Image 1 (tube, rainbow, N blue to C red):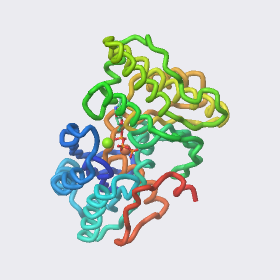
Image 2 (image 1 turned 180 degrees about the vertical axis):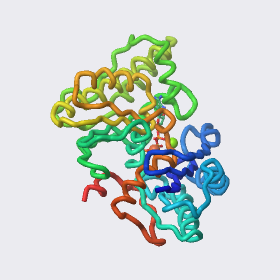
Image 3 (image 1 turned 90 degrees about the vertical axis):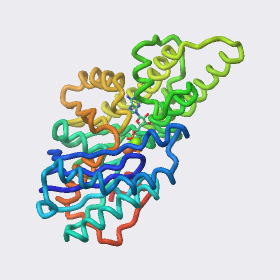
Image 4 (image 1 turned 135 degrees about the vertical axis):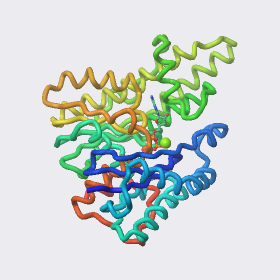
Length: 337
Ligand code: ATP
Ligand code: FE
Ligand code: MG
């Protein structure tokens, strides 16, 4: 089964062709980071215009790379949420037009399910599974009883994990998005500053990163007032430790409570080297659980992951009509039925 997938929820315009949900025949991604960097974040109007400029080129590229004709394809998968409405609309229009022109069925895909399903590019997820989905807009710990069945165990109450990296990056005047840069700086630094590990003692699986962010802001402002120079690498290490500790703490407790066969790490922050290492170490203690991090090529936004999650829907006969609309606030709860 060959599925062509469209993704345009944020600042990446992407089209991919994926076979049987796990073989990537092509994955064409056009990023527009450069256009947003000087604003320190995504500007919605700029993003929509970029998607419009790029979508046909990315589509042609994906078909050429995969060496397939539209008649070789079985369905069109598309992200319909969550994300920026203007951005989502471009991918949705592209997908609908392609489906109509080539008489193919449309598969609606949740972007968050897409991030998780990309673990199948590493090795098949085995169920029951647990997933930690950490991205620019979300921080979710979910239990999966089978493909496409999600139960949210915990989520962030304020900032997302990736958002906290980006906000600290902005404070340190690093280019947006700052996750990768902070990850590299943290390798060079030492954990000299004690920041709070958010909600370490509360008896639930939720996360909170705004307290940590405030602590970092206070630290920097305090140093500025005293005209002290701060060691940015040490700050990066200390901050990243606090984020990873919070994620690991919740994960460990959830794993003890819910024995699972596999543990998936997904989303843009899944690229973080310390998080991958710490989870590898943690999962060594759980003999019956395989650790399946999403391969680094597919942690950020891409259409291949939408093709993978689209295949789950395809097998369950979940299709949409041409009147499919965007759902900018879509979350996992809506998939739990
Ligand atoms: P969502 O998926 O919630 O809609 P998004 O699609 O914008 O949000 P992703 O593209 O999945 O988010 O992830 C981007 C985030 O990942 C950014 O916040 C970025 O800073 C972060 N990130 C990327 N690489 C790393 C890294 N090595 N360490 C930490 N964070 C990282
Ligand atoms: Fe994403
Ligand atoms: Mg992104």
